[in-house]
Image 1 (cartoon, one colour):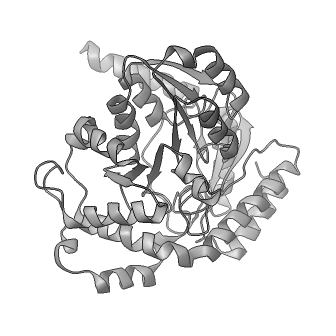
Image 2: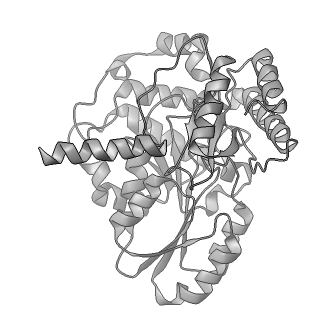
Length: 378
């Protein structure tokens, strides 16, 4: 059949370009450097057992069995949202099934025909999908170039009811961070700006109590839509947005990925709240994983390779897809599981190894990693 033949040819083309993906299985004997479990909670048996020991009642349920607008609005999710709002000192919080659900649903629910979106060129694919679903006019400003964003605002802001400025606190492929003070300055200078900040890779790792970069900078209250995901440093599942009460009510009534999906299981919601309460005591883990990020970045730049990281995500840009695949194989032989990141996830010619550091990496293993990078194993 022509349909299947066309699919087979397209997969063959991906093979030839070195871009075909497959579902991997992480060998347990390798040090995992491709996980987003930044605080190492996934392997923390003691923490997990403490959670199970205090688990009771509805929180033990393994499914909500319904959307929240039917019968899935359990006490566990209400307690979590209240705890999140209190932690951030915000009016409200709303929990989503995933970061993808949040980012594809929030903007279409809030934007109108007289809305404009200005988005950083390197925002996550889920945010791009949300912009496309919203269907409003948008421009992309140069990566982390808030001066360019300001130029676009000066040119276009007056023509629209509101302008959503969308960016991330920590970018997932380069590990660099946004200038939060500069971002907030845009809002202060343009009264119709709505700030949308994705903290997927910031929460857990940054901030005195692990609430992310905006909270660390004392600017969380300036962010109109602060999105965090629970599937990374939280070692849980789901996502949330910190916002005003009126925004929360609009999202409950308009957000399709929220309305038309089964709510998260109570046991997962209870675990997320348990981790949120444990975050303040994890300062040492946060400090350690950030320190590893700095040391690995220094080792890469010492080789004359540009590395913009300012976080636990550290890229080693290699260039071609084939060279990145070969480098990943060499690290695997040395006992490290690190995946090659290739187009279209990153631009052509910038295939890389993306080291995603976690507090579960031992000092001995990290010393071996530094030695491999310093010696030019990739």
